[in-house]
Length: 347
Image (cartoon, rainbow, N blue to C red; front, side, top):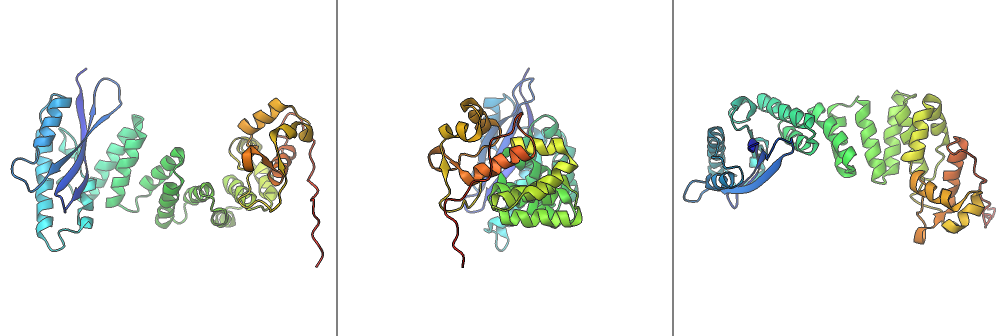
């Protein structure tokens, strides 16, 4: 199958150098995957600024520049030149709109130039939906990010990006998008939950606690808010069990799954002088085998946050307490709360 062009998207314009950055997305064969050609057009020089694009298309896809692309790019270049001639024409912020421009190779209805802003928003949304359905989530997220330049409070795009960054493990980006989502849609519980989850991943447990607490004031029986609150309290060294008990009562299977697979049993600020245990000492301490210890570390979240891969006693106590309290293991662990080595002096 011959390669065919999918779209051309503008990336940036540098008013100091006159460089217009763009990418061409094409499908090299029958599979839905896309390949990208990155190039820069140089404005303000002699000759046709579209010549680099013509050469790249002849080299990679053996095709000329589509007439719609030629017309669309000339329209964009003309608009840029008018901006450059205006007062403050060297201000890069004047050219953010360039990043919102996308060209279909043959259909002006699926291209952004010459449409009012609301229609441009829908064109970009249509492209994002189409790419998402093809499994091109990264490209879909990128286009929705461009869409937000035109419609900063578009909650559907903010929700998609929050989920995308969550799946990619990009906590800082997820937190930033969730904050924008909350401002655009203050009553949306999912936005607050995404923000709380991002804050937990960033180690900002106190802020996460406040976020989940706000959700629980409005929805006191919300499963995910109880689990998030338990996680925030646990990381801070507080007592997570009231919220874990509430979650377990609401949905035992979901709570058990979280406690086995994703719950973080570390303490962000372990107590001073905390006793450390090597892995080789855990079988006798817990009444299990060495192989089970390895399984618990790999599959059940037993934390090795001490120096040289040791287990902190405070975290071991929390982990073992959760395993026993919610019967997450076939047999209980032979463990009770540790006796402190130094009793505090009475004031």
